[in-house]
Image 1: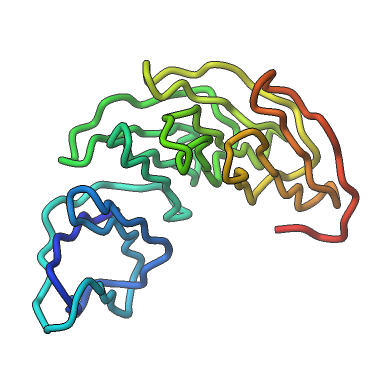
Image 2: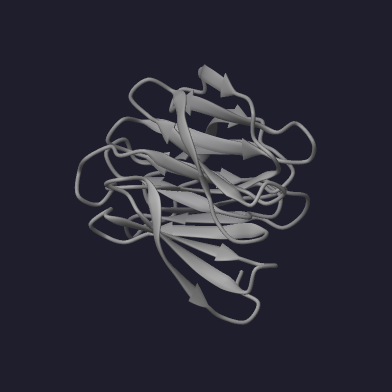
Length: 193
């Protein structure tokens, strides 16, 4: 699940689980963190001890991966483990869309987040050797881009002009030009993740 936590300063939630990934909503003072079995999660914002509270809990897929966009307040969750779907939520936990047609969705990144523009989201399809593009404005699939074998890791540059895909079985990194949604270069490497 993904839990939305509100916090004022420093705190810890006992029996929370293993935090796979976190994202900070600096506009609304929340952290979003995946909750996998065991461990605990701490949040930091200030100087005194205050216990955070869980305000929203959302289901996630087998990998516990998500991305958060504070500019359009969307949480995007690839649901691996056989469902081959991607869920899009708002920050209150309302399901906005469940998108289908993925082939082993495993990771997600979003373009232009730091530039203040809510660009598309990109989801790796580890079994389909592709990346699916999601239109965040309409919560729809905008297209699919073929990349190297076994794409898992994905990230965008600060400007949101390029998307980097680590192809785990293809021994390469695909560089996607986000303006034309196509692979602009393939960089050979050994075993990227």
